[in-house]
Image 1 (cartoon, rainbow, N blue to C red):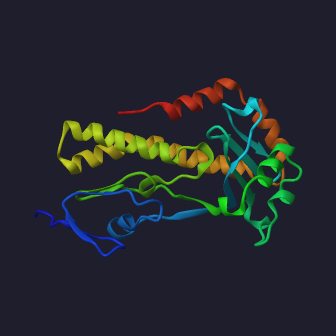
Image 2 (image 1 turned 60 degrees about the vertical axis):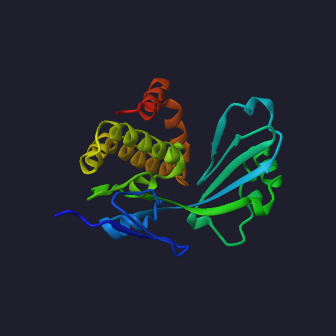
Length: 244
């Protein structure tokens, strides 16, 4: 039996039929929910503010992305261009109130953190919950394949969300150069990508939980300092290695 085309309906009212569908519609994927009927979105119980501001960072921070850990809170920043700085701030959900003052919340951090916050206009700040997608058993159905966050959304602690989506597209492209048997390609795609993205999703989740400890953070800091540089390097190499 040959499957009929998928009928895709868009928010603007447009409709289109297609034999092949790639579900690249994010963690709240309607394609995944309707066709594969799976997906458990996990909430890390952390609130995250992200901001963009004009700010002249000291020269020593020009080529580094930095993250500072406190007691149940974190702050990170990176230089984007000549005077643009992107930053993020996290706290545990139990410490969140609707009218929270970020400057007061991070007053025990380095003065540079407070200066970045003070320089940011409220309209250039967004607030989100930290969530991910628990690993799902299958990324594909007949003539349909999930990619990116629709298949394996991760928390941002390893900076790998967009990176892994790009790797998905690259691997799929290479496989489709060799074969146009879409369903076998989709199955091979999951075999190639599954182990790596599951590792990233699970490791990122654990890092997020450890970094937000409110009790035992002194022990946490000691343990982190004792991790050999060689171990960190192996973790980086594992993430950077592209399997195809």
